[in-house]
Amino acid sequence: MTDETRSNHISITQCRQWLKCQYQFYLSRIARRSGKYGVKMALGIAAHKGIAQANMFRQNGVVPDMDVVIQQASQELDEELTRREYVFSEMRTPEEIQRRLQKVLKVAIPQLDKATGPPMLIEHKIDGGVLMEDGTELTGYIDLVDVNGSIYDFKVGGKPKSQKDADKDIQLSLYRFAIHGLHPTPTKVSLVSVDSKTGDVKTAESLRDDSDAMKAYETVNAVSKQIEIAIRDNNYVPNVEGWWCSPEYCEHWDTCPYGGGGSK
Image 1: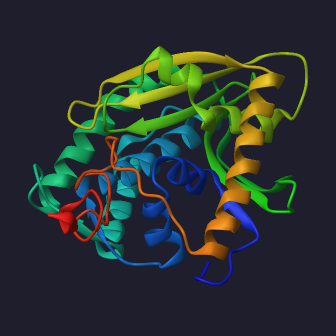
Image 2 (image 1 turned 180 degrees about the vertical axis):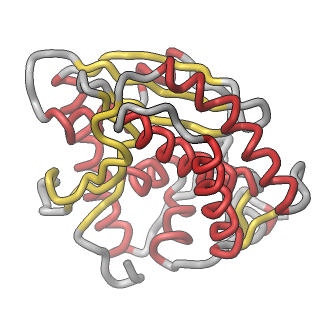
Image 3 (image 1 turned 180 degrees about the horizontal axis):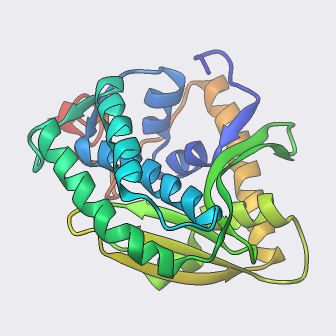
């Protein structure tokens, strides 16, 4: 996207970012300004890589080879730390992050094996199958769909997700719509939290039916139209009242003229 135009797709991540803070969306997606990211994000990306690798072993009916899992995740972490500018806080060096990553995966993988069903789809790409009213395509990746059609979204770091989080999460509703479309049988969905310090796993399960899927679809439709209007009018509303307005969770916090360090 540029200041004058937008692409013909909207990702689930973009939608969530817009709903949190339109100005953060503008800086990241429209102005495309580089920022500084909290290092926990790099840990989370690498851990997702390791979890996906472990699920591929499970999909083939074998016990995950932890040496391979950790090797793949560690390589992803090395690449991620050079891809973006990260702020080192509690984990002060790349070596310390690598040690934390290995610890988290060694604890989390066996617990995830018990918390999720046999894998059918791993990091499944949503692309071209869901269209908004204006023709915009919904895109994204689903961490895991098991053989029973249950949907799992892994969250590494942050506070463990609660039952309320699972019941209201728009991402899970959109995943249900993308995978199953509209049908009368409710689908089990789960937010699976992985502690970024200990590796302990907590699962919050919920159900999604047609009404949940349609509400989520309508929300994305509205967001898509709002983005088009915001680009036309060059007007993006900041939201500084949430947890995302912090140096740990907003890469533009240092320079933001509203709620961040740039406002001081």
